[in-house]
Length: 259
Image 1 (tube, rainbow, N blue to C red):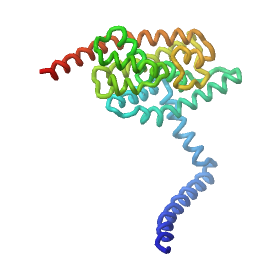
Image 2 (cartoon, rainbow, N blue to C red; image 1 turned 180 degrees about the vertical axis):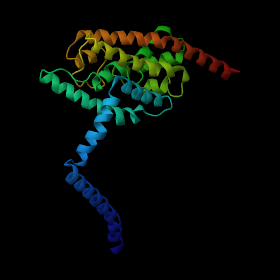
Image 3 (tube, rainbow, N blue to C red; image 1 turned 90 degrees about the vertical axis):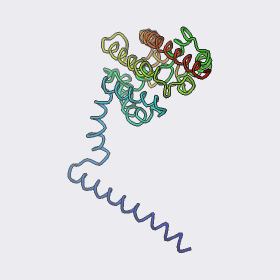
Image 4 (cartoon, one colour; image 1 turned 120 degrees about the vertical axis):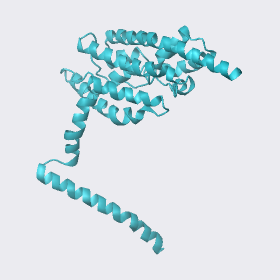
């Protein structure tokens, strides 16, 4: 019985030392500055990161890097969910509070804006890819994948596209997969800045279908629906030449396998 008890103390002692050290550091900082560790992290780390990361170009760069990871089979949440999304949630929370109080909306870039205009059909705005495939695709394989992926894609679930089309390790799809979501964020940002659409003031679930998501996120602004529709049309046009390139690659691979 003494060995298990001794082992538990072997784990417990380092835990006590670590907790005591942080408690002493926290108490020392509070006595010297009047701020606790949470306040210091929020003031000197979180807030600067939020202003950089949720600025237009900071958001576009971080979100594009996240989508780039998908091309290597790594889930984009490594960057988006861990770095960018928490900052975007703070922004939409501030927008909701300002909207309810009848005040000016402080943040254009927020989690609803990014998911509504940069996540149309899922990462890479692949609903545009599915539409482009139905319009010009010649490959029977990709068309079958598009048919299977359409229903979940409407609700922004696109794993069938990511792994079935595929997007992973597919150089043919790299450019539009990164470009189209960034274009949606940029277009909606400037449309909001110019007063063409209302800012997003509602936290909309990421599974909300396109067009409805724009309407709900902006508290019923029909102009946002038109803006999202424009983004979808442009996304389809951008994807079309790459769908054709991908079809040619598939044809060549089939020819090589038959030789």
